[in-house]
Length: 212
Image (cartoon, rainbow, N blue to C red; front, side):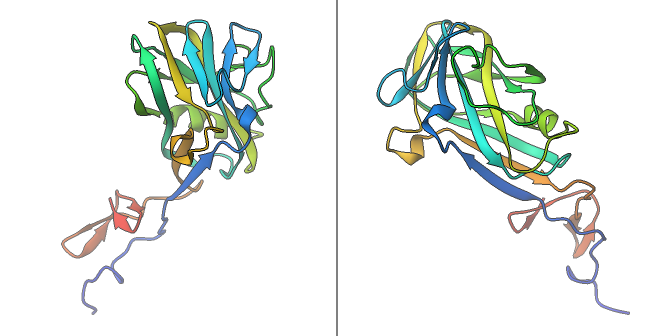
């Protein structure tokens, strides 16, 4: 018999879930659309505009997620430079296998939205984080989704209240850029388990070197 340790009492299969961070790589990939027509990558030099007449969109290229991976959590982070009236709306994904570049008459208002959505707020200057887990899951579950495809998120419908200026990816300050952070488990995987009293039990995930 052996002593019970972390190393010899694990439960197979052991799956370590992973994190990826997606950044805006092209100036045109974040901006806002006026109504259903004009796409503007830069409303002003360093910002895009959010209001009931201008709805933002964010496109992330070559997203390294295999088809049907399990999205444990996903967060879209944007930085508000200034705002008035705490504008808020609803964000969706572009429900396609490979999201095309934004363009006039091909912006957030024109995309085919995912069934999943999330409330997004642009209130108060600083970082605004929106959980988009169900949206990303719906997109990667598409039959023809493949790793390396492009993924886009955009606001549709009414934007409540007044307006906000949101830092754009060409602002020159990377810390202010829109970012999509995704934690996922490979398709067909199983959680590694939870360490209790020196024994690894089922039901948790090994995340960032720590069992959860």
